[in-house]
Length: 159
Ligand code: MG
Image (cartoon, rainbow, N blue to C red):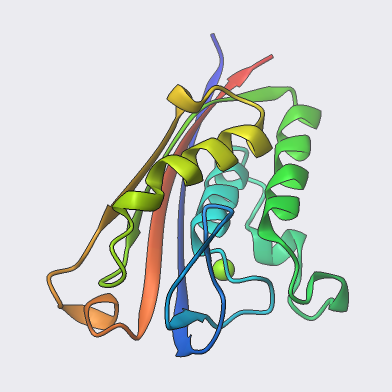
C-alpha cells in the first residue's frame, strides 16, 4: 500500500466586524479573520496538509493572493480544487484531523457542522474527518484573541 502523510499549519489575524468562517461554516462572533480569501484558517491548513503530502508546495503557490480571482473566495472552492489535484496525482483522502486554536467563541457547538461540511467537500465519510478545538489558556496571540491558528494532518492513499 502506498500512503502519503501531510501536515499543514495556518494563522490569520482577527479583526472586529469581519465574518468568521471556519471549516466551511460561518460562526456568529464579533471578530473574523483578516484575509484575501474568506479567511477559513482550518481549510487552509487542511489544503496545505494535502499539498504537503504530495510535496506540491502550499496553497500560497497554488492560489496566489496577488490573484484577484481569489479575493474573498469561499475556501471550500479551494479545498475542492486541492482534492482534484490529489486525485489527479493518483491519491484519495484517507482521513483528516485538525485542531483549531482560538480563545473565543466556544467552537464545540460548531464542530459537527464543520466535520459535515468538510466531509461533503472532500467527498469522504464524516467519520474520516476530525475537527478539534482548543483554547490556549489565554496564552499567546490566540489567547489574546489577536488571531487564530490551525494545525492539520491528512493521510492520502494511492487509488
Ligand atoms: Mg490562510
